[in-house]
Amino acid sequence: MNKISNQNTKNFRVFKLENDDMNGYELKIWRRGFGWCQEIAAEQLNVTTRTYQNYEKSESVPYIVILATQALSLKMRYNEMQNKPKKEILRILKITLEK
Image 1 (cartoon, helix red, strand yellow):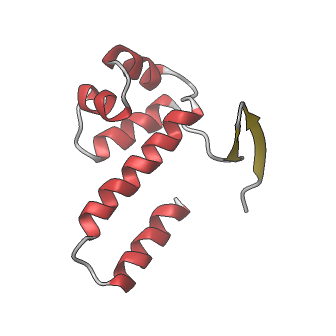
Image 2: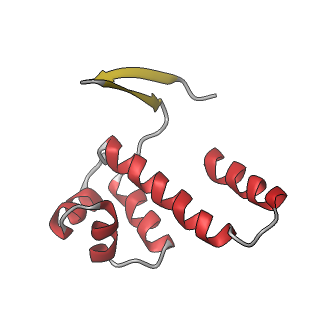
Image 3: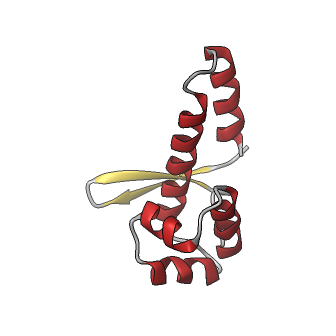
């Protein structure tokens, strides 16, 4: 089971799973999973293309980017699931969140 660390950041708390890290190669795999070019991924993450390219080259991606990739993944899953039965939606979400 993953450990959760509690970090105070200004006026809000960030709960980070211990094994919730991502490197640049994993970010590239995430992007390619959607069939996106670097420019589209940068736009979706609201960063410049150059910044996104640097993320893909790095050994560690900022945690806020990890959260954004997870949110975008859930959003894309939601779009896929709109016409599916509730039971199927819950199964897909469970699989997605366990990754």
